[in-house]
Image (tube, rainbow, N blue to C red; front, top):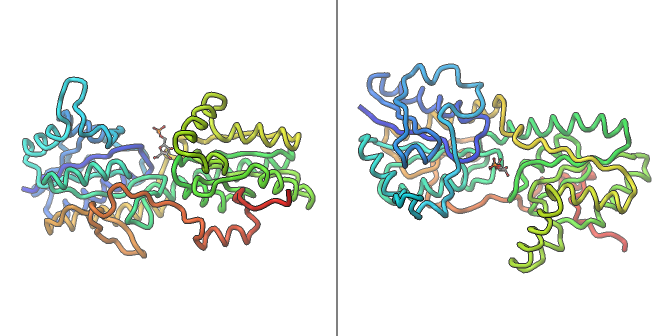
Length: 366
Ligand code: F6P
């Protein structure tokens, strides 16, 4: 009997259930429903730490392909606190290892993003058999071309920009759509291009308010009195980006004290400079919810099946990922702690610029 633990960790996204279904279907088909027991830990690593789990049956995994969220629940268990005892003095790493041993697991499958895969790597280094699966709407996980959840979130954010387009054009207003992504701009970049945004601001390309104003004015001169900006949560001004870390922290704290987010500050700056109405739309967690799009369902199913295959070969310690359309296994030690960011020199940025999209970094005549 093979015993496989599974958990979903960190911010949820659309294809978590579809991926678990993929793993389960693969395992049941390799071992038969009597040859494998799947144990689902509740609320991510918390379930593993505090022994909260469900013994799953094949029935638990049916009807999941299109269901958003996670049937196991999820939580954030920050990596930087993982080695610190909990409020009752419990050693979390030891507790996770104890649960794993107590349940006589052969392996643990972790569906998670950056922080979660760091913990997965730590558990692997501690001697557990671990397989990682790449989750996140941010697509910032190293070692994989794309993560499941990303395409679904692009689709939701794009729908928002599409809806905003008609109202922005009717009222000749400037609209900011704030897209998720504190550290990386993959989601904003893709939704911005797909939704036909005029200005895209991402953390990797610091902006200059003057160049944003000049793009808006330039549009006005060519008869376009409305402008749409797709702005990442983590978009940062050039001025702040160039500050020393300590000063930047203080400047961002001041921003947070004065505005709900960077988009609202930008809206005030644009209104001040142009005298035009600016509205901010924040789709927020909608971007993580709802049904996975077809691409994510296929990706999740493939990743899940390959994870099952790896388990049958006792091949552990890897992130099961996708590279150049092929499902591959990348050592967790190679990907842990690395953030996959947008390269400002990437072709996609040059192509977007050629389409007339501003990244808020162009030089102005003044
Ligand atoms: O990591 C996924 C993500 O949705 C980010 O894009 C976003 O910045 C963050 O999580 C929001 O976190 P929370 O759900 O804890 O508010």
